[in-house]
Image (tube, rainbow over all chains, first blue to last red; front, side):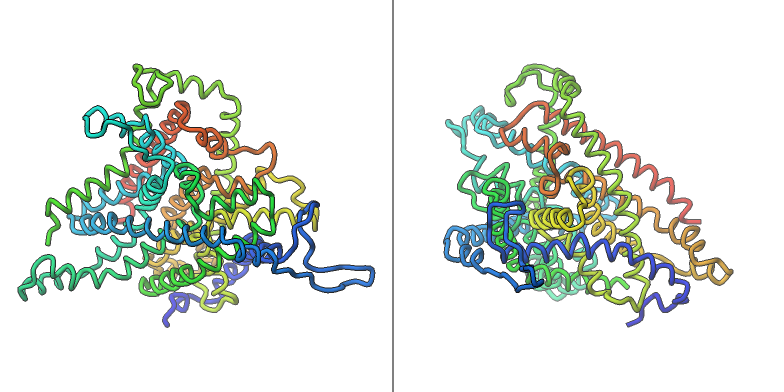
Length: 305
Length: 269
Protein backbone atom coordinates (compact mmCIF):
# COMPACT_ATOMS: atom_id res chain seq x y z
CA UNK A 1 0.00 0.00 0.00
CA UNK A 2 1.49 3.33 -0.95
CA UNK A 3 0.74 5.88 1.75
CA UNK A 4 1.23 9.55 0.95
CA UNK A 5 3.08 9.94 4.27
CA UNK A 6 6.03 8.11 2.77
CA UNK A 7 6.68 11.08 0.52
CA UNK A 8 7.17 13.23 3.60
CA UNK A 9 10.08 13.18 5.91
CA UNK A 10 8.60 11.15 8.76
CA UNK A 11 10.61 13.20 11.24
CA UNK A 12 8.88 16.37 10.10
CA UNK A 13 5.63 14.85 11.30
CA UNK A 14 6.97 14.29 14.77
CA UNK A 15 4.87 17.11 16.18
CA UNK A 16 1.73 15.51 14.73
CA UNK A 17 2.56 12.23 16.40
CA UNK A 18 2.65 14.13 19.68
CA UNK A 19 -0.39 16.31 19.01
CA UNK A 20 -2.61 13.38 18.13
CA UNK A 21 -2.26 12.10 21.68
CA UNK A 22 -4.69 14.78 22.84
CA UNK A 23 -7.71 13.73 20.72
CA UNK A 24 -6.68 10.10 21.22
CA UNK A 25 -6.86 10.45 24.96
CA UNK A 26 -10.06 12.49 24.63
CA UNK A 27 -11.78 9.74 22.64
CA UNK A 28 -10.55 7.01 24.97
CA UNK A 29 -11.93 8.90 27.95
CA UNK A 30 -15.14 10.33 26.52
CA UNK A 31 -16.06 7.72 23.96
CA UNK A 32 -14.65 4.30 24.80
CA UNK A 33 -14.77 4.39 28.61
CA UNK A 34 -18.47 5.34 28.75
CA UNK A 35 -19.36 2.15 26.88
CA UNK A 36 -17.34 0.04 29.27
CA UNK A 37 -19.21 1.72 32.12
CA UNK A 38 -22.58 0.93 30.50
CA UNK A 39 -21.49 -2.68 30.21
CA UNK A 40 -20.48 -2.64 33.86
CA UNK A 41 -23.74 -1.14 35.10
CA UNK A 42 -25.78 -3.57 33.03
CA UNK A 43 -24.19 -6.34 35.12
CA UNK A 44 -25.11 -4.71 38.43
CA UNK A 45 -28.23 -4.97 40.55
CA UNK A 46 -30.50 -2.00 41.01
CA UNK A 47 -30.55 -0.67 44.57
CA UNK A 48 -32.11 2.36 46.14
CA UNK A 49 -29.03 4.50 46.57
CA UNK A 50 -26.92 7.04 44.77
CA UNK A 51 -25.78 5.75 42.31
CA UNK A 52 -28.72 3.33 42.12
CA UNK A 53 -26.82 0.12 41.38
CA UNK A 54 -24.45 -2.26 43.15
CA UNK A 55 -20.69 -1.92 42.61
CA UNK A 56 -18.99 -4.37 40.27
CA UNK A 57 -15.89 -4.82 42.37
CA UNK A 58 -16.37 -5.68 46.02
CA UNK A 59 -13.94 -3.96 48.35
CA UNK A 60 -13.92 -5.22 51.93
CA UNK A 61 -11.65 -4.63 54.89
CA UNK A 62 -9.17 -7.09 53.42
CA UNK A 63 -9.15 -5.32 50.09
CA UNK A 64 -10.52 -6.76 46.92
CA UNK A 65 -13.09 -9.43 47.71
CA UNK A 66 -14.36 -10.40 44.32
CA UNK A 67 -16.45 -9.60 41.34
CA UNK A 68 -20.15 -9.09 41.73
CA UNK A 69 -21.86 -9.79 38.45
CA UNK A 70 -25.50 -10.47 37.76
CA UNK A 71 -27.12 -11.30 34.49
CA UNK A 72 -30.55 -10.71 36.00
CA UNK A 73 -31.07 -7.54 33.94
CA UNK A 74 -30.49 -9.46 30.74
CA UNK A 75 -32.63 -12.35 31.97
CA UNK A 76 -35.33 -9.79 32.67
CA UNK A 77 -35.10 -8.46 29.12
CA UNK A 78 -35.40 -11.92 27.61
CA UNK A 79 -38.08 -13.30 29.92
CA UNK A 80 -40.22 -10.22 29.59
CA UNK A 81 -41.60 -10.61 26.08
CA UNK A 82 -42.26 -6.87 25.98
CA UNK A 83 -38.64 -5.97 25.20
CA UNK A 84 -38.30 -8.66 22.53
CA UNK A 85 -41.32 -7.22 20.78
CA UNK A 86 -39.92 -3.69 21.00
CA UNK A 87 -36.55 -4.70 19.55
CA UNK A 88 -38.24 -6.52 16.68
CA UNK A 89 -40.63 -3.66 16.11
CA UNK A 90 -37.76 -1.11 16.06
CA UNK A 91 -35.85 -3.21 13.53
CA UNK A 92 -38.97 -3.60 11.43
CA UNK A 93 -39.85 0.09 11.49
CA UNK A 94 -36.26 1.09 10.68
CA UNK A 95 -36.14 -1.45 7.83
CA UNK A 96 -39.42 -0.29 6.29
CA UNK A 97 -38.41 3.35 6.73
CA UNK A 98 -35.06 2.61 5.02
CA UNK A 99 -36.76 0.82 2.14
CA UNK A 100 -39.18 3.71 1.59
CA UNK A 101 -36.23 6.10 1.74
CA UNK A 102 -34.43 4.05 -0.92
CA UNK A 103 -37.51 3.95 -3.16
CA UNK A 104 -37.69 7.72 -3.09
CA UNK A 105 -33.97 8.48 -2.85
CA UNK A 106 -32.78 6.27 -5.70
CA UNK A 107 -34.81 7.95 -8.45
CA UNK A 108 -33.80 11.35 -7.08
CA UNK A 109 -30.09 10.49 -6.98
CA UNK A 110 -30.36 8.94 -10.44
CA UNK A 111 -32.06 12.02 -11.85
CA UNK A 112 -29.55 14.41 -10.27
CA UNK A 113 -26.57 12.38 -11.52
CA UNK A 114 -27.87 12.59 -15.10
CA UNK A 115 -28.16 16.41 -15.16
CA UNK A 116 -25.59 18.81 -16.63
CA UNK A 117 -22.93 19.74 -14.01
CA UNK A 118 -24.32 23.18 -13.13
CA UNK A 119 -27.82 21.97 -12.43
CA UNK A 120 -26.46 18.88 -10.70
CA UNK A 121 -24.71 21.09 -8.18
CA UNK A 122 -27.84 23.14 -7.56
CA UNK A 123 -30.14 20.14 -7.16
CA UNK A 124 -27.70 18.51 -4.78
CA UNK A 125 -27.48 21.70 -2.75
CA UNK A 126 -31.28 21.71 -2.52
CA UNK A 127 -31.14 18.21 -1.03
CA UNK A 128 -28.52 19.15 1.58
CA UNK A 129 -29.90 22.58 2.50
CA UNK A 130 -32.71 21.44 4.85
CA UNK A 131 -30.11 19.47 6.79
CA UNK A 132 -28.71 22.75 8.12
CA UNK A 133 -32.04 23.62 9.71
CA UNK A 134 -32.67 22.06 13.10
CA UNK A 135 -33.74 18.42 12.86
CA UNK A 136 -36.03 18.83 15.87
CA UNK A 137 -37.82 21.77 14.29
CA UNK A 138 -38.17 20.05 10.93
CA UNK A 139 -39.78 17.04 12.60
CA UNK A 140 -41.98 19.42 14.57
CA UNK A 141 -43.14 21.06 11.33
CA UNK A 142 -44.91 17.83 10.39
CA UNK A 143 -47.18 18.09 13.44
CA UNK A 144 -48.75 21.20 11.92
CA UNK A 145 -49.13 19.48 8.56
CA UNK A 146 -50.48 16.10 9.71
CA UNK A 147 -52.81 17.25 12.47
CA UNK A 148 -56.49 16.31 12.34
CA UNK A 149 -57.05 20.03 11.89
CA UNK A 150 -53.77 20.42 10.03
CA UNK A 151 -53.10 21.84 6.61
CA UNK A 152 -53.31 18.55 4.70
CA UNK A 153 -56.59 17.50 6.29
CA UNK A 154 -58.14 20.96 5.87
CA UNK A 155 -57.13 20.93 2.22
CA UNK A 156 -58.55 17.45 1.59
CA UNK A 157 -61.79 18.38 3.37
CA UNK A 158 -62.04 21.58 1.34
CA UNK A 159 -61.61 19.72 -1.95
CA UNK A 160 -64.21 17.20 -0.83
CA UNK A 161 -61.96 14.18 -1.33
CA UNK A 162 -62.63 13.16 2.27
CA UNK A 163 -65.46 14.16 4.56
CA UNK A 164 -63.85 13.33 7.88
CA UNK A 165 -60.25 14.16 8.84
CA UNK A 166 -57.73 11.36 8.30
CA UNK A 167 -55.76 10.26 11.33
CA UNK A 168 -52.24 10.90 10.04
CA UNK A 169 -50.44 11.98 13.20
CA UNK A 170 -49.46 9.96 16.28
CA UNK A 171 -49.26 6.62 14.47
CA UNK A 172 -46.73 4.48 12.59
CA UNK A 173 -47.48 6.23 9.30
CA UNK A 174 -46.25 9.52 10.72
CA UNK A 175 -43.07 7.82 12.00
CA UNK A 176 -42.32 6.32 8.56
CA UNK A 177 -42.88 9.70 7.00
CA UNK A 178 -40.60 11.28 9.60
CA UNK A 179 -37.83 8.75 8.90
CA UNK A 180 -38.04 9.19 5.12
CA UNK A 181 -38.13 12.96 5.44
CA UNK A 182 -35.29 13.26 7.95
CA UNK A 183 -32.91 10.73 6.43
CA UNK A 184 -33.51 11.32 2.73
CA UNK A 185 -30.27 13.32 2.23
CA UNK A 186 -28.26 10.50 3.86
CA UNK A 187 -29.71 8.10 1.31
CA UNK A 188 -29.28 10.39 -1.70
CA UNK A 189 -25.65 11.46 -1.10
CA UNK A 190 -23.94 8.01 -1.21
CA UNK A 191 -26.22 6.95 -4.07
CA UNK A 192 -25.40 10.09 -6.00
CA UNK A 193 -21.65 9.69 -5.40
CA UNK A 194 -21.92 6.19 -6.82
CA UNK A 195 -24.21 6.93 -9.76
CA UNK A 196 -22.22 10.00 -10.75
CA UNK A 197 -19.04 7.93 -11.17
CA UNK A 198 -20.87 5.37 -13.25
CA UNK A 199 -19.47 5.01 -16.71
CA UNK A 200 -22.08 6.20 -19.18
CA UNK A 201 -20.27 4.40 -21.99
CA UNK A 202 -21.49 1.15 -20.50
CA UNK A 203 -25.08 2.30 -20.89
CA UNK A 204 -24.40 3.43 -24.45
CA UNK A 205 -22.87 0.05 -25.16
CA UNK A 206 -25.94 -1.64 -23.75
CA UNK A 207 -28.15 0.55 -25.93
CA UNK A 208 -26.00 -0.17 -28.99
CA UNK A 209 -26.41 -3.83 -28.33
CA UNK A 210 -30.14 -3.32 -28.50
CA UNK A 211 -31.03 -3.21 -24.80
CA UNK A 212 -34.17 -1.34 -23.91
CA UNK A 213 -33.92 1.52 -21.41
CA UNK A 214 -35.49 -0.42 -18.58
CA UNK A 215 -33.43 -3.50 -19.38
CA UNK A 216 -30.23 -1.49 -19.49
CA UNK A 217 -31.11 -0.05 -16.10
CA UNK A 218 -31.81 -3.43 -14.51
CA UNK A 219 -28.83 -5.20 -16.11
CA UNK A 220 -26.20 -2.45 -15.97
CA UNK A 221 -26.99 0.54 -13.75
CA UNK A 222 -28.64 -1.25 -10.85
CA UNK A 223 -25.92 -3.89 -10.28
CA UNK A 224 -23.19 -1.25 -10.54
CA UNK A 225 -24.90 0.96 -7.97
CA UNK A 226 -25.13 -1.76 -5.30
CA UNK A 227 -22.30 -0.22 -3.19
CA UNK A 228 -24.17 3.09 -3.13
CA UNK A 229 -27.40 1.35 -2.18
CA UNK A 230 -25.72 -0.49 0.69
CA UNK A 231 -23.98 2.66 1.91
CA UNK A 232 -27.15 4.75 1.82
CA UNK A 233 -29.28 2.06 3.46
CA UNK A 234 -26.82 1.55 6.33
CA UNK A 235 -26.58 5.29 6.87
CA UNK A 236 -30.36 5.44 7.27
CA UNK A 237 -31.04 2.11 8.98
CA UNK A 238 -28.48 2.30 11.80
CA UNK A 239 -29.58 5.61 13.32
CA UNK A 240 -33.26 4.90 12.58
CA UNK A 241 -33.26 1.81 14.84
CA UNK A 242 -32.37 3.88 17.89
CA UNK A 243 -34.30 6.98 16.83
CA UNK A 244 -35.93 8.90 19.66
CA UNK A 245 -37.14 12.29 18.42
CA UNK A 246 -39.29 11.04 15.52
CA UNK A 247 -41.31 8.43 17.47
CA UNK A 248 -41.53 10.78 20.48
CA UNK A 249 -43.04 13.62 18.46
CA UNK A 250 -44.89 11.87 15.63
CA UNK A 251 -45.52 8.35 16.95
CA UNK A 252 -48.58 7.12 18.78
CA UNK A 253 -48.76 5.54 22.22
CA UNK A 254 -48.59 2.14 20.51
CA UNK A 255 -45.55 3.02 18.38
CA UNK A 256 -42.91 0.77 19.88
CA UNK A 257 -39.38 1.96 19.30
CA UNK A 258 -36.47 1.14 21.52
CA UNK A 259 -35.12 4.70 21.69
CA UNK A 260 -38.30 5.90 23.32
CA UNK A 261 -38.52 2.92 25.69
CA UNK A 262 -34.91 3.48 26.74
CA UNK A 263 -35.64 7.14 27.42
CA UNK A 264 -38.62 6.24 29.62
CA UNK A 265 -36.70 3.46 31.37
CA UNK A 266 -34.11 6.01 32.33
CA UNK A 267 -36.02 9.24 32.90
CA UNK A 268 -39.33 7.83 34.15
CA UNK A 269 -38.59 4.47 35.80
CA UNK A 270 -35.04 5.46 36.79
CA UNK A 271 -33.93 1.85 36.42
CA UNK A 272 -30.32 2.35 35.38
CA UNK A 273 -29.19 -1.29 35.19
CA UNK A 274 -32.12 -2.23 32.95
CA UNK A 275 -31.60 0.87 30.80
CA UNK A 276 -27.93 -0.15 30.45
CA UNK A 277 -28.83 -3.71 29.53
CA UNK A 278 -31.34 -2.39 26.97
CA UNK A 279 -28.60 -0.30 25.35
CA UNK A 280 -26.02 -3.11 25.39
CA UNK A 281 -28.48 -5.38 23.55
CA UNK A 282 -29.30 -2.57 21.10
CA UNK A 283 -25.60 -2.11 20.48
CA UNK A 284 -25.16 -5.85 19.88
CA UNK A 285 -28.00 -5.73 17.35
CA UNK A 286 -26.34 -2.84 15.57
CA UNK A 287 -22.76 -4.09 15.72
CA UNK A 288 -23.00 -6.07 12.47
CA UNK A 289 -24.38 -3.18 10.36
CA UNK A 290 -21.92 -0.76 12.02
CA UNK A 291 -18.93 -3.01 11.21
CA UNK A 292 -20.23 -3.33 7.66
CA UNK A 293 -20.44 0.43 7.39
CA UNK A 294 -16.92 0.85 8.81
CA UNK A 295 -15.52 -1.57 6.24
CA UNK A 296 -17.29 0.30 3.47
CA UNK A 297 -15.82 3.60 4.73
CA UNK A 298 -12.29 2.20 4.87
CA UNK A 299 -12.58 0.84 1.35
CA UNK A 300 -13.83 4.20 0.14
CA UNK A 301 -10.85 5.97 1.71
CA UNK A 302 -8.44 3.57 0.08
CA UNK A 303 -10.20 3.97 -3.26
CA UNK A 304 -9.96 7.75 -2.95
CA UNK A 305 -6.16 7.60 -2.69
CA UNK B 1 -31.00 7.47 -20.89
CA UNK B 2 -31.30 11.12 -20.02
CA UNK B 3 -33.82 10.56 -17.24
CA UNK B 4 -36.68 12.60 -18.60
CA UNK B 5 -39.55 10.17 -18.27
CA UNK B 6 -42.64 11.73 -16.66
CA UNK B 7 -42.68 9.00 -14.00
CA UNK B 8 -39.15 9.82 -12.88
CA UNK B 9 -39.78 13.55 -12.97
CA UNK B 10 -42.87 13.28 -10.78
CA UNK B 11 -41.01 11.19 -8.19
CA UNK B 12 -38.22 13.76 -8.10
CA UNK B 13 -40.74 16.59 -7.77
CA UNK B 14 -42.47 14.72 -4.95
CA UNK B 15 -39.13 14.27 -3.17
CA UNK B 16 -38.28 17.96 -3.29
CA UNK B 17 -41.82 18.88 -2.23
CA UNK B 18 -41.45 16.55 0.75
CA UNK B 19 -38.21 18.27 1.72
CA UNK B 20 -39.52 21.81 1.49
CA UNK B 21 -43.26 21.83 2.25
CA UNK B 22 -42.86 21.49 6.05
CA UNK B 23 -40.31 24.31 6.15
CA UNK B 24 -42.40 26.64 3.98
CA UNK B 25 -45.58 25.97 5.96
CA UNK B 26 -43.87 26.78 9.27
CA UNK B 27 -42.55 30.07 7.87
CA UNK B 28 -46.00 31.07 6.61
CA UNK B 29 -47.76 30.19 9.83
CA UNK B 30 -45.23 32.03 11.97
CA UNK B 31 -46.79 35.24 10.62
CA UNK B 32 -50.30 34.08 11.40
CA UNK B 33 -52.21 36.22 13.87
CA UNK B 34 -54.49 33.37 14.93
CA UNK B 35 -53.56 31.14 17.84
CA UNK B 36 -55.17 28.26 15.96
CA UNK B 37 -52.49 26.84 13.78
CA UNK B 38 -54.62 26.08 10.77
CA UNK B 39 -56.79 29.17 10.69
CA UNK B 40 -55.35 32.17 8.91
CA UNK B 41 -56.12 35.21 11.04
CA UNK B 42 -54.16 37.79 9.08
CA UNK B 43 -50.51 38.85 9.04
CA UNK B 44 -48.93 39.52 12.39
CA UNK B 45 -45.56 39.65 14.11
CA UNK B 46 -46.98 38.97 17.57
CA UNK B 47 -45.25 35.59 17.94
CA UNK B 48 -41.89 37.19 17.29
CA UNK B 49 -42.62 39.79 19.95
CA UNK B 50 -43.66 37.08 22.40
CA UNK B 51 -40.33 35.30 21.87
CA UNK B 52 -38.40 38.24 23.26
CA UNK B 53 -40.61 38.41 26.33
CA UNK B 54 -39.96 34.75 27.10
CA UNK B 55 -36.96 34.98 29.40
CA UNK B 56 -36.46 31.22 29.66
CA UNK B 57 -36.30 30.98 25.91
CA UNK B 58 -33.76 33.76 25.52
CA UNK B 59 -31.64 32.21 28.26
CA UNK B 60 -31.82 28.76 26.62
CA UNK B 61 -30.88 30.23 23.24
CA UNK B 62 -27.88 32.08 24.67
CA UNK B 63 -26.69 28.94 26.47
CA UNK B 64 -27.02 26.90 23.27
CA UNK B 65 -25.04 29.45 21.27
CA UNK B 66 -22.26 29.55 23.87
CA UNK B 67 -22.01 25.75 23.92
CA UNK B 68 -22.13 25.55 20.11
CA UNK B 69 -19.32 28.09 19.60
CA UNK B 70 -16.99 26.53 22.16
CA UNK B 71 -17.65 22.92 21.16
CA UNK B 72 -17.35 23.64 17.41
CA UNK B 73 -13.99 25.32 17.95
CA UNK B 74 -12.55 22.47 20.01
CA UNK B 75 -14.06 19.82 17.76
CA UNK B 76 -12.53 21.44 14.66
CA UNK B 77 -9.05 21.61 16.20
CA UNK B 78 -9.09 18.08 17.57
CA UNK B 79 -10.81 16.64 14.51
CA UNK B 80 -8.30 18.22 12.13
CA UNK B 81 -5.41 16.70 14.10
CA UNK B 82 -7.02 13.25 13.99
CA UNK B 83 -7.70 13.56 10.25
CA UNK B 84 -4.10 14.61 9.58
CA UNK B 85 -2.71 11.82 11.74
CA UNK B 86 -4.89 9.18 10.07
CA UNK B 87 -3.93 10.47 6.65
CA UNK B 88 -0.22 11.17 7.06
CA UNK B 89 1.19 8.96 9.78
CA UNK B 90 2.00 5.56 8.33
CA UNK B 91 3.04 3.98 11.56
CA UNK B 92 0.78 5.12 14.36
CA UNK B 93 0.20 2.86 17.31
CA UNK B 94 -3.49 2.08 17.70
CA UNK B 95 -4.40 3.63 14.36
CA UNK B 96 -7.22 1.16 13.86
CA UNK B 97 -8.68 1.92 17.30
CA UNK B 98 -8.42 5.66 16.62
CA UNK B 99 -10.18 5.46 13.29
CA UNK B 100 -12.82 3.19 14.82
CA UNK B 101 -13.45 5.53 17.75
CA UNK B 102 -13.76 8.48 15.44
CA UNK B 103 -16.16 6.85 12.96
CA UNK B 104 -18.40 5.16 15.50
CA UNK B 105 -20.13 8.33 16.76
CA UNK B 106 -21.43 8.90 13.22
CA UNK B 107 -23.65 5.84 13.43
CA UNK B 108 -24.05 5.35 17.18
CA UNK B 109 -27.63 5.82 18.38
CA UNK B 110 -27.64 9.13 20.24
CA UNK B 111 -29.61 7.68 23.07
CA UNK B 112 -26.80 5.22 23.87
CA UNK B 113 -24.08 7.86 23.57
CA UNK B 114 -26.06 10.09 25.90
CA UNK B 115 -26.64 7.40 28.51
CA UNK B 116 -23.02 6.22 28.33
CA UNK B 117 -21.61 9.73 28.77
CA UNK B 118 -23.92 10.44 31.68
CA UNK B 119 -22.67 7.31 33.45
CA UNK B 120 -19.10 8.38 32.77
CA UNK B 121 -19.67 11.81 34.29
CA UNK B 122 -21.35 10.29 37.34
CA UNK B 123 -18.51 7.78 37.81
CA UNK B 124 -15.89 10.49 37.39
CA UNK B 125 -17.74 12.67 39.87
CA UNK B 126 -17.72 9.86 42.42
CA UNK B 127 -14.12 8.89 41.72
CA UNK B 128 -12.24 12.17 41.37
CA UNK B 129 -14.84 14.71 42.41
CA UNK B 130 -15.17 16.21 38.93
CA UNK B 131 -17.60 17.08 37.46
CA UNK B 132 -19.53 17.85 40.65
CA UNK B 133 -22.53 19.17 38.76
CA UNK B 134 -23.64 18.53 35.26
CA UNK B 135 -24.54 21.39 32.99
CA UNK B 136 -22.96 23.53 30.30
CA UNK B 137 -19.50 21.97 30.73
CA UNK B 138 -20.64 18.36 30.44
CA UNK B 139 -22.85 19.22 27.46
CA UNK B 140 -19.90 20.94 25.78
CA UNK B 141 -17.66 17.89 26.32
CA UNK B 142 -20.33 15.61 24.86
CA UNK B 143 -20.78 17.86 21.83
CA UNK B 144 -17.03 18.08 21.17
CA UNK B 145 -16.87 14.29 21.21
CA UNK B 146 -19.53 13.64 18.58
CA UNK B 147 -18.81 16.72 16.44
CA UNK B 148 -15.16 15.70 16.13
CA UNK B 149 -16.25 12.66 14.11
CA UNK B 150 -17.92 14.88 11.51
CA UNK B 151 -14.93 17.21 11.30
CA UNK B 152 -12.66 14.21 10.66
CA UNK B 153 -14.85 13.12 7.74
CA UNK B 154 -14.82 16.60 6.17
CA UNK B 155 -11.09 17.22 6.64
CA UNK B 156 -10.11 13.72 5.51
CA UNK B 157 -11.96 14.08 2.23
CA UNK B 158 -10.21 17.43 1.66
CA UNK B 159 -6.82 15.87 2.46
CA UNK B 160 -7.47 13.06 0.01
CA UNK B 161 -7.89 15.54 -2.82
CA UNK B 162 -5.06 17.87 -1.80
CA UNK B 163 -1.83 18.44 -3.64
CA UNK B 164 0.99 17.81 -1.19
CA UNK B 165 3.78 19.11 -3.40
CA UNK B 166 3.41 22.66 -2.00
CA UNK B 167 4.14 21.46 1.51
CA UNK B 168 7.04 19.37 0.28
CA UNK B 169 8.42 22.40 -1.54
CA UNK B 170 8.12 24.48 1.63
CA UNK B 171 9.94 21.75 3.55
CA UNK B 172 12.66 21.52 0.92
CA UNK B 173 13.15 25.27 1.17
CA UNK B 174 13.95 24.75 4.82
CA UNK B 175 10.62 25.56 6.45
CA UNK B 176 10.28 24.27 9.96
CA UNK B 177 7.55 21.61 10.25
CA UNK B 178 5.22 23.69 12.43
CA UNK B 179 5.75 26.83 10.35
CA UNK B 180 4.99 24.90 7.18
CA UNK B 181 1.91 23.52 8.85
CA UNK B 182 0.51 26.92 9.76
CA UNK B 183 1.67 28.76 6.62
CA UNK B 184 0.88 26.13 4.00
CA UNK B 185 -1.25 23.26 5.29
CA UNK B 186 -3.78 25.24 7.32
CA UNK B 187 -4.62 27.71 4.52
CA UNK B 188 -5.07 24.81 2.12
CA UNK B 189 -7.33 23.07 4.59
CA UNK B 190 -9.24 26.25 5.43
CA UNK B 191 -12.42 25.50 3.43
CA UNK B 192 -12.69 22.09 5.11
CA UNK B 193 -12.00 23.61 8.53
CA UNK B 194 -14.71 26.23 8.00
CA UNK B 195 -17.31 23.73 6.86
CA UNK B 196 -16.30 21.38 9.67
CA UNK B 197 -16.76 24.19 12.18
CA UNK B 198 -20.15 25.16 10.74
CA UNK B 199 -21.26 21.54 10.75
CA UNK B 200 -20.20 21.11 14.38
CA UNK B 201 -21.89 24.36 15.32
CA UNK B 202 -25.17 23.26 13.71
CA UNK B 203 -25.02 19.79 15.24
CA UNK B 204 -24.40 21.23 18.68
CA UNK B 205 -27.17 23.80 18.34
CA UNK B 206 -29.53 21.03 17.28
CA UNK B 207 -28.73 18.27 19.74
CA UNK B 208 -31.60 17.24 21.98
CA UNK B 209 -31.02 13.66 23.09
CA UNK B 210 -27.40 13.72 24.25
CA UNK B 211 -27.82 17.12 25.93
CA UNK B 212 -30.88 15.88 27.82
CA UNK B 213 -28.86 13.02 29.31
CA UNK B 214 -25.71 14.89 30.28
CA UNK B 215 -27.38 18.09 31.43
CA UNK B 216 -28.21 18.85 35.03
CA UNK B 217 -30.68 21.08 36.82
CA UNK B 218 -30.50 24.65 35.65
CA UNK B 219 -28.96 24.00 32.26
CA UNK B 220 -31.67 23.94 29.60
CA UNK B 221 -30.54 24.24 26.00
CA UNK B 222 -32.72 25.58 23.21
CA UNK B 223 -33.66 22.13 21.80
CA UNK B 224 -34.54 20.91 25.31
CA UNK B 225 -36.77 23.93 25.81
CA UNK B 226 -38.40 23.52 22.39
CA UNK B 227 -38.94 19.78 22.90
CA UNK B 228 -40.72 20.34 26.22
CA UNK B 229 -43.10 22.79 24.52
CA UNK B 230 -43.59 20.88 21.28
CA UNK B 231 -44.45 17.62 23.01
CA UNK B 232 -47.78 19.17 23.85
CA UNK B 233 -48.53 20.03 20.21
CA UNK B 234 -48.03 22.96 17.90
CA UNK B 235 -47.32 26.36 19.42
CA UNK B 236 -47.11 29.45 17.19
CA UNK B 237 -44.04 30.89 18.93
CA UNK B 238 -42.03 27.77 17.97
CA UNK B 239 -42.97 28.55 14.36
CA UNK B 240 -41.39 31.96 14.87
CA UNK B 241 -38.17 30.42 16.30
CA UNK B 242 -38.00 28.06 13.34
CA UNK B 243 -38.35 30.95 10.91
CA UNK B 244 -35.56 32.87 12.62
CA UNK B 245 -33.28 29.82 12.41
CA UNK B 246 -34.16 29.32 8.73
CA UNK B 247 -33.31 32.96 8.06
CA UNK B 248 -29.96 32.56 9.84
CA UNK B 249 -29.16 29.45 7.82
CA UNK B 250 -30.13 31.20 4.60
CA UNK B 251 -27.82 34.12 5.40
CA UNK B 252 -24.97 31.79 6.39
CA UNK B 253 -25.33 29.74 3.20
CA UNK B 254 -25.41 32.87 1.00
CA UNK B 255 -22.32 34.29 2.72
CA UNK B 256 -20.52 30.97 2.40
CA UNK B 257 -21.32 30.71 -1.31
CA UNK B 258 -20.21 34.32 -1.94
CA UNK B 259 -16.97 33.72 -0.04
CA UNK B 260 -16.26 30.49 -1.88
CA UNK B 261 -16.99 32.02 -5.30
CA UNK B 262 -14.62 34.89 -4.43
CA UNK B 263 -11.94 32.47 -3.39
CA UNK B 264 -12.04 30.55 -6.60
CA UNK B 265 -9.92 32.98 -8.69
CA UNK B 266 -7.23 32.90 -5.97
CA UNK B 267 -7.19 29.15 -6.01
CA UNK B 268 -6.73 29.14 -9.77
CA UNK B 269 -3.52 31.20 -9.60
